[in-house]
Amino acid sequence: MPNRLTQKKNTWCSGCGNFGILNAVQKAFDLFENETNNGESLVMTSGIGCHGKIFDYLNTSGFYSLHGRAIATAQGIKLGNPNLNVIMFGGDGDSMGEGLEHTLFAAKRNENITLILHNNGVYGLTTGQFSPLSKIGYKGPSTPFGNPESPFIPIPMILEAGASFVARAYSAKINDLSQLILRGIKHKGFSFIEVLQPCVSFNNTYQYYNEKIKPLEKTNLTFEEAYLFSKSIDPIYTGLFYQIGKPVYSDQVIPENYHPEERKKQEKRISALRKYF
Ligand code: SF4
Image 1 (tube, rainbow, N blue to C red):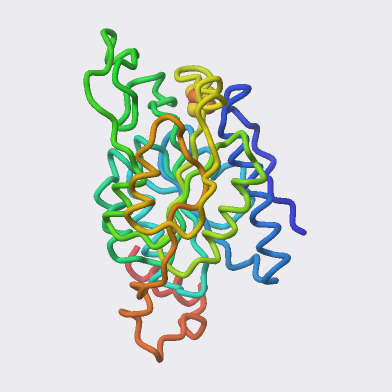
Image 2 (image 1 turned 60 degrees about the vertical axis):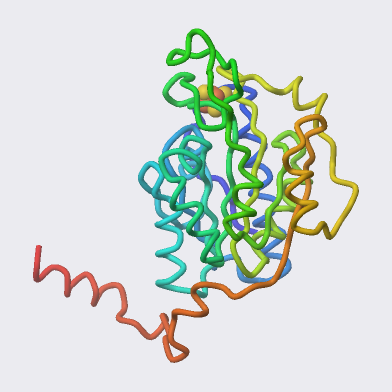
């Protein structure tokens, strides 16, 4: 099994929920490799924010994208080579703010990629400004008297947009999260996994989540049940809310005779580009 970590120094705050996500992703990639012997097909993208540092730590090919544009990058990678399994990491500011329309349209298209949403309810990297998922009353540098806005609830929104695999997990439950990530990668269609991720420095929600989180007991939920269960705030349900099969974007738009492996080799592409630069 390849070493899943790079040599980069980890600068996440001690106790950050991102560590749980990093561990779960490594486990999920190992499980995927074991099951499919196709670990080389795993490719990642990330946006900008604390979550995005996962790109530095995870020893996987990919593209460190712009703020809010990782989902567009992920779709581009998939269209360029549909044989790849593309996993995108996004923060709540990144995928639910700056890049929200990309997220919704990727779900609408049901592109065959996986989005792992690091939901810490705050802009952590820039020291605690409120995000689209911050709770009412959240106090930070940009909302010193408390956030007056209601947060988005990502799962009902993404269900409505058309995602075909929708789940929620908690970064402190690493085994459950790794299983959901594995299932998301293997799902054919847009898979969305919201991960409740405490930010110990600016939004420490460990105690809150430890009290409120409850695994879904029911399986094979209908769309309406998934919608209702995902909106509950006490308890906050985790698990797989919804999964259906439906047509995938890249299957519909890529011609049958398109074989990415037959395209020009990298050296030829680079020498062709050198003519212009
Ligand atoms: Fe994690 Fe928050 Fe620290 Fe960022 S600021 S590394 S999200 S604890």
